[in-house]
Amino acid sequence: MCLAAPSRVIEVRDGTALAECFGQTREVSLLLLNEEVAVGDYLLIQAGGFAFERIEAERAEESLLLMKELMTQDDDARRWGDAA
Image 1 (cartoon, helix red, strand yellow):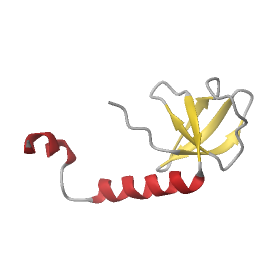
Image 2 (spheres, rainbow, N blue to C red; image 1 turned 120 degrees about the vertical axis):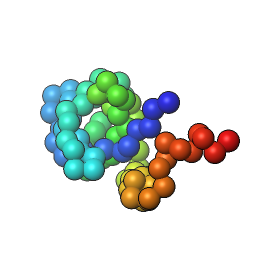
Image 3 (cartoon, one colour; image 1 turned 30 degrees about the vertical axis):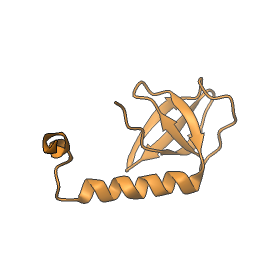
Image 4 (tube, rainbow, N blue to C red; image 1 turned 90 degrees about the vertical axis):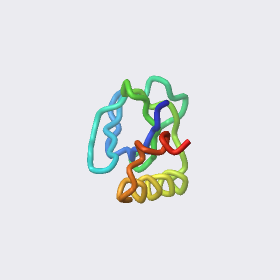
């Protein structure tokens, strides 16, 4: 299973974008998108570096806040499967 953290577009180039998430930037392909992308948009990106969905800022920011909360908890998420 793959979890895509929303990444904010900081620069749009010819067919690619520079996106940032949790302080990390990377260049991503826009080849799979059928819509225009602008600086400030949020994208979901596959592990291979292809953006596959543009999402609303409110939804992206909500998801990022939740992810940040989960990452700062003392509970080790890797143990969740052991509880069953």
